[in-house]
Image (cartoon, rainbow, N blue to C red; front, side):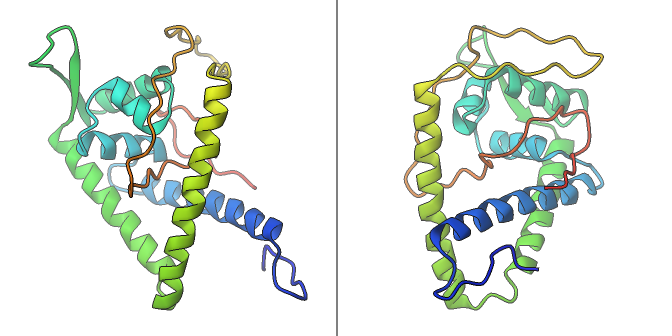
Length: 213
């Protein structure tokens, strides 16, 4: 069933925007389900953390800045991955007061399996899309992503204090440094950061949550 009602002159901008949000939410849940069914199951956030460390973002501050996340959120993801043997902290040869993050062999295996599975899903989703339409879609999505990033960073700059996170039931809230927000960086030209701007936070020791939206 179409998410957009038929209109005489085609869908208006508001309808397209609502469809874009719906597609983004659906893909996030789909990818979360795929990741949760792997031999080494991952949450969406855990996969992003593994992938980014693999790409060279090896400090907590770098991960937070790259994904526009708070340091406590990054710490929660990293701690969960370390406990599972997928990531480890190594001594920083340039600064012994700090540590660098690296994937373990098991973490490399998990990251490769996740990437392969998500690539197959993406290929399936685009299988019936004509090549010329796919090229136009790619350009349109790049433009939308750039606009969304601009709005996202502008909102963060206007109010740099993140909302208080509600502690999980039966678990004490953890305290971080004031505000807990790492410096924000603009995406590199031509690079798309795939972190969904609308995704909800969830404990990384639990499975991906399905919702009914």
